[in-house]
Image (cartoon, rainbow, N blue to C red):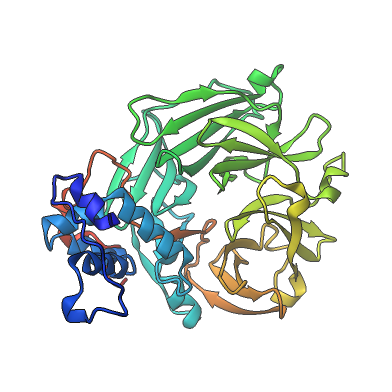
Length: 431
């Protein structure tokens, strides 16, 4: 049975059991209904979210199809693997108030790398001042809303304008050295989304007091669940509260310090709610004092990546081809600060890799003002493009993929998500 027919059968639709003829045998005029439906699904999966939301009003059957878990996951897979980057955008927050920004599709930015403004629109205006951005996963944006009434994790699909938030959460009052870390990712087994919150106090007397780890499953009736504490303390960055976990292969990953200050990756499994250690490249493991310059974790090409600085002149990026296999670490690229025009004194926290394209090119943010490069590791060549024009800085960017995923599982259909706001379902007015 086709995926299309299976979806409709769950809603008491007539089951389609006709075996489709071979496409190269039957002329278009006599194609079976089953094959036509499969072709319809294939065509729809290639369209942007803005169009799909409108098409959900064509018929009840199309609304059921476009709202189904099968189609939503199929569309995300198509969007993420597409080479044209029509559904990929840059997402970031400004250091100038209560707003997030989405760029035009990356295909437009890269093809037209002009300095003209390409801001795409203000997503929310009623959020708290200076929200903490956790990240974007499968079209859902996650951020921390700090208010006097309590702390909440908030979720938004900017394409459908559907939003929700977690139950209230809090941590014990720690010393001046304590801080919180967060991560947001996808549980592919149960088709759910999870947020991990870590309270860190390096001065804690025991492991349980050094780290407290809690997990919230989006849409679950339960509240935050406490899981086993780490035996290590996540490594502090310049601003430790802004070091989200890196989502890859169904896990959230943080760079941590062992008791002897050497570095290790602690990986939280979002299916089992357990953790394990993942080794870094050999030269890092051999450095028992942990004095590796500017170590950071990233994800490129669906692989965990590790970066460090070499002699304050080079940015070195490693890629773990097989997750969990320390022998699969390989150097992906080396970038000379001088070659790409990065001033190490004025931009000490850059470059930041964001996305690897199908041809191996890598997009990196190189300044806090929205300057980016498209870097080709094989030819050691690059070109600049600009997203953001403002006298104020743009906080860290991340890559966002448009999708139909709803942060509210109790809203089963697209129609119910946008019935009262059809005129503003799509992001902005230009995309």
